[in-house]
Length: 553
Image (cartoon, rainbow, N blue to C red):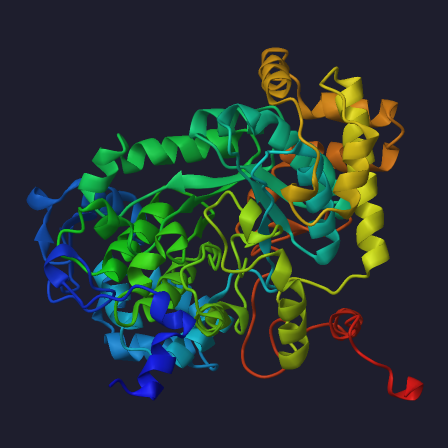
């Protein structure tokens, strides 16, 4: 006989998840590994000769890079001398401004910041995130993909995502050679949804950079860094090569950020017995040292690893906070699915949702899960109402707004029609009226007619050989009668030349004004300070379509 109570519990979704006990020797520990180094720094003649208990003669390439470029040495000895508990208290104290903290935390070592956040509860870290987020207003980013790489559906989904409020959109491919079409479709659809949305196409780095240089994308975030030398070498990379790649993007007017996350090193088998959080701290120091404006972190695609061990979800919040302590834009993940439990996925997200980050999700799936080519998301298109209602429940700006069905249908149709015109003017395979109609009302790729994939791939390759640029897209939109969309794409291209949106945590509003940590910094200092939801936005957030007017009853 078994306990019927335990039989019922065993049948719950959470018990389909994987959980393991800690194993520090291989790095299968989220925080507080006995093998983590103790914080230390020694500086002689302006050069670091000891870093976290390691003499410079024993530095690996990560230590060398961090010691040379990643620490504010002018205040390092002062910052390192402050007790870690005192720093932790400063982080969550509303009376200590962000401007006072950042000069200290950027002068610490990886082991020091790891020790500091280890003193804090989840609640205290959330208070610190509220204060340390770089840009005053939080925002959100989405994934726009489908299993068919169907360009019309990508354009329609992007347009819907735009009116729902996403400030950035990312796509990727099922078939690599579809990348030019995906980038083109996302660019057009996004600007129809809301002028000023930033878009990217996540593919291998040479192609991604090429798409960006031609003006078909506006930002990149797939420049991955790791916390041990062996993992870097496994990918034929170094911190210097990643810094060079970052400069390649930035010099061509492309916003970019690095990507890292707790668990990647143990997943690759090279964690050196260190905690996931300590290794992630090294990643954030490398990101800062390389000159990147920001980071996508929060475990991201490795989330199943920390989620399986004790306090792993706490470590994810801690790594988000460390990114902010480095004065970086933080796209705080919440993107890849990691659990069968709705309760767990919401609990994991609330720690970024409630305090707000620069991008609460670095990949809220704007499609149903079956179409998400980033291995499935923690949130997807079937969760829009839940997300909007949680915002309403808690009086929080989570980056989205409720929309009406007729408005969604209208922008989806416009996006599909505009892409039809662009394909026609650029001499690409025709988009049929049936595809336009299907994409207007579609939920997923199951609702779309199939395209001639061979013909599409040949055309996408030819499109790259012809060196089609964003300016060609502008001309095609004008010829097709979509002057307003053309103007938005052209403004985006002009902003590339100015380079203002390369500043930390930069996004555009609908008038293409830049909001960043430079001109719109977070100035939270307790109740009624920092970001406050405007009356206009609050009226939009609370006006959900499901609400019944009492007067009508």
